[in-house]
Length: 251
Ligand SMILES: Nc1ncnc2c1ncn2[C@@H]1O[C@H](COP(=O)(O)OP(=O)(O)OP(=O)(O)O)[C@@H](O)[C@H]1O
Ligand SMILES: [Mg+2]
Image (cartoon, rainbow, N blue to C red; front, side, top):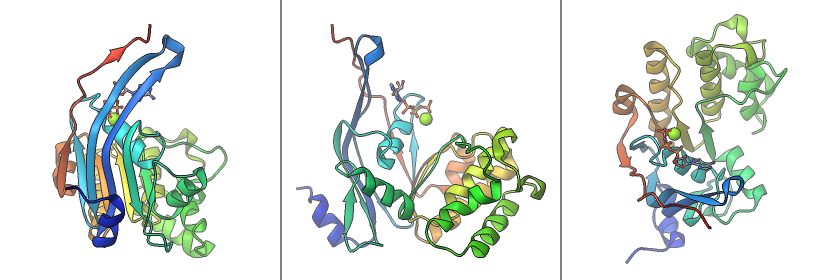
């Protein structure tokens, strides 16, 4: 008999994330209420030090699943719970959480790196990367020093650090995005093709950073378009298959 979410977090100190029976149906209101089943019945436990790589064909629902885990999409079915070590609370349910609890989880617990950087106009690269540390109360000098070290490791040229990344190349923006996503050492990391626009050398550097995060105990769920990176970072794979696609018009 499956244990309840409550019991599983109390019984297992290493459990960071539990998703049970996650489904997502989109309703396209602008297009006659057509419904698209993107995801059906996906369950996943992730423990500290694990990197679960999502695999499956394009359209299988990999990105949709990650967005549900981050609380960007509200799952249509199922429950998602994430351990919150900082609070006395044992875990928080993303699926039933108030917006302020979701924001709290994102600040302290769950980091998300998407394929594209959401550029904030006029904010320098160095400030953008240091910001997750500053918002967690790290001293400004230390935050900037750590941001500089990570940008250097990711081969982002120093002359770019004072500039806003709006004009950067795709690969430069992606490395800034990765630096921002990894700098705070979130205990749970969700990575959606973070290496898609990188050359082989920078892809390897990112893979090393992901392995380091895993080895310090982060629980990671990721999507990677190339097999080399998957092989380096994965401790396990979860295959998603497109649900028997019911695409129904309501009338
Ligand atoms: N916001 C949305 N509104 C409507 N349909 C969506 C939305 N997001 C995703 N979908 C649909 O859900 C399905 C799964 O998409 P998703 O982006 O999760 O696939 P994926 O496995 O990440 O694919 P890829 O490997 O191409 O990135 C697709 O059919 C897509 O059209
Ligand atoms: Mg995707």
